[in-house]
Image 1 (cartoon, one colour):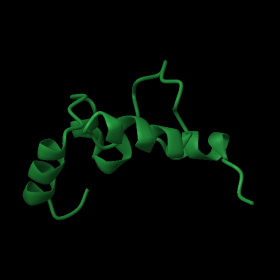
Image 2: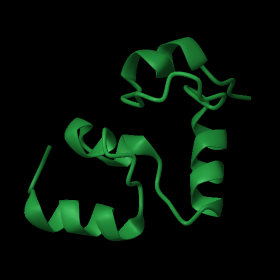
Image 3: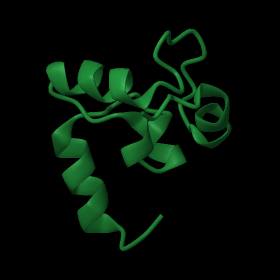
Image 4: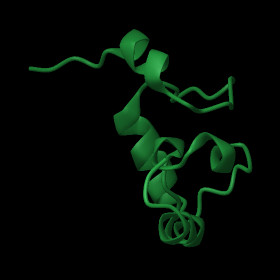
Length: 69
């Protein structure tokens, strides 16, 4: 059975909301944001992450404007 590797995940996580209790625990992060109709921050480039707009609309708009980030 796999175990969550929070310390390793945190090294790659681009979330700037430091007090988040789900930081580095991707299964909880995805579940939380999906229930709110959002996507987690790791789906967005850093400059978009800083806006805290994690809506599906923002994700689609960002994908349409950029090939890669």
